[in-house]
Image 1 (spheres, one colour):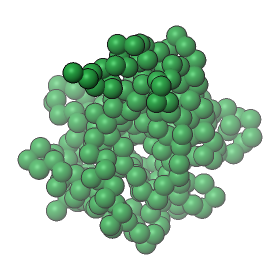
Image 2 (cartoon, rainbow, N blue to C red):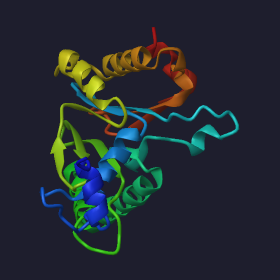
Image 3 (cartoon, rainbow, N blue to C red):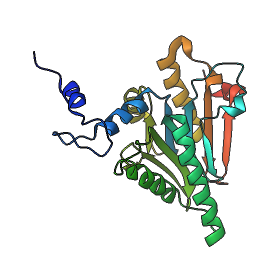
Length: 241
């Protein structure tokens, strides 16, 4: 009986290092890390006409945990925010580096950093860990949203270190289902409030009886003031029908 391809790779050791290509040209440790991202809780970002939003499912409903310690939307700078899907501790390291880069830019140049510079640094770090031995790839996808020069920006970096700009995107579990809904409805005239309502409706349909507003963390950055505003808990009630 023929052995499945993945089992053959394991038996021959092609998945023992992030730097070892399989005969088919795959980096198996990188592909395993991508599966980790698919197991992570979902986050959705949208560029709206008046700013950018991120709606993140924390997936934490334990009332023994202090809510402020389980945020899923991270402040990089007052005009840039981030979220992640995958291994949360990996995300924390990358977000801390992004915060440091942002503050160094302000000190050096006296101006706020462009969101694309943040995602470029994160992507460079992630790519390096697919190329050097003795370490594993970052098991996390990072989404960066921010405003710069009067426009909203949304970027996502995958495990390999690639990144793209998006009008709207989803990372984590059920991401393809969410993207299908985004493709149908997202347009350049959507406001931030409309965007949050739309994403909450998607999550309500996906989660069914498991839907609770307490498990969501929302970040909004408007073009008007360029500052991050957080919403969570009962503050989200007005966005749910």
